[in-house]
Length: 51
Image 1 (cartoon, one colour):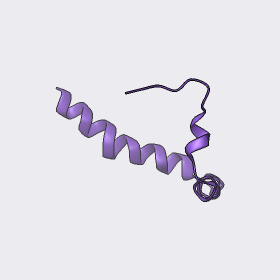
Image 2 (cartoon, rainbow, N blue to C red):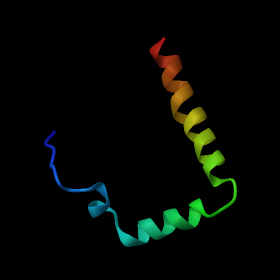
Image 3 (cartoon, helix red, strand yellow):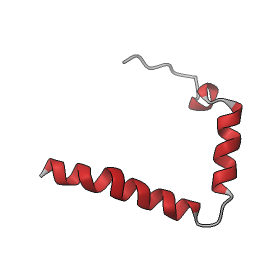
């Protein structure tokens, strides 16, 4: 996969996506819910498959 130096990932994000993300991050407890979601939906099943 090619890499492009000097281009930031923000250049590929739509302004409405940034706005929606900011609105979610402003919700109390969202960061905890998001971390737990990733932990139980992705990380733990991945860990179980690797064993």
